[in-house]
Image (cartoon, rainbow, N blue to C red; front, side):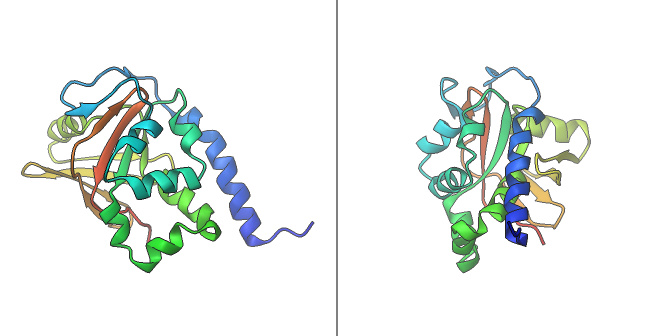
Length: 187
């Protein structure tokens, strides 16, 4: 059987997804103090489905085959681009959501996932403790840096794409969904 570059990318994406649950940290999944909204009886996948402004991301997660991960026992923080964030990508956003781009979509989504259960309040406290910024590694292996300007928390990836936290974070049984206003795209 002849393997094309696309086949290798698809195989790499599947292998990477298999390792995703093993990357989680054991944390207190019921820590919801300060999170305005949430139902700790729902998983991350269900919380996404209940959100009015995350429909595009919900579809992308389903298309990428990540629902099983977000329904699982691992604890994650999902930096969740809003529908407007995907719309701002224009044609590139529509192309990204196509079946042909699935391996790329999986890679981009993994760069929006952090191990553990972190509320915006936790990130804000870490910024204060570090006197300005906190850098974390995503499940995709990239780095994101959190900062605050006044009351606004932002996240910037290694390509320099910055997104502000928007809306209300959603607590779930296995993590937190934090809406952001921009898709964190690579260079």
